[in-house]
Image (cartoon, rainbow, N blue to C red):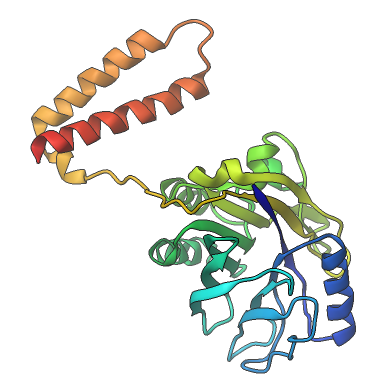
Length: 306
């Protein structure tokens, strides 16, 4: 498999040519091929000409109302990329890019969530991503929320209500998205942002991938802080040799309106747990196995109805 190195970084301003040169040289030394930047602070439609830099292919989203926003995706000059489609937020908070690289279709998504109203913003953007995505999906950026406050915040607390946090977690789960760093560091406490006013650390910067692509991810690290109050997050992505279409199963909820189907599924689930909930069986393995089993039952029932 080929490999692709990616980094997401809330850079806290990139208008300085000196800062840009230093950052790009560092990324180049680390062999980064795709970079996701947040808070670029570029003025609306006034991004600098970066065609001669080490990262010469850029996609920007800037705000018409504030020069403290902005997200950008940059691709290294030695990495061939053919653009298929792009969706840009006029407020400078997200950009969706779809194209071909290494004979694979990729969808790159760069997010910079607001520091208030995160629940509504995240729940609004995820369906847009689902409708736009194709091929291998990578979502990177600053979500401005600690998804697991116990592990992702030095205070152990979240700044947003628990109900809002649960809604975000549930929507990510429903969308089949996994926090790639947490998947490989299940119990580690580490952070990507230092808040000087509150003297606290938080993990706000994420790389999210679909469950079907988590096996492609390796070497996921929180790197050293240099140019910002955020730490960059890097990941190496293994690229399969051939393009494969991904299929996300969705439950046809009309099946649940049929009493005989509901009764059948309930009985099968009782039998499943009776037979499989035995000594030395991991609860996590049992739960994941049950999801695959009940999915098969629903697919079978849907086929029977058709």
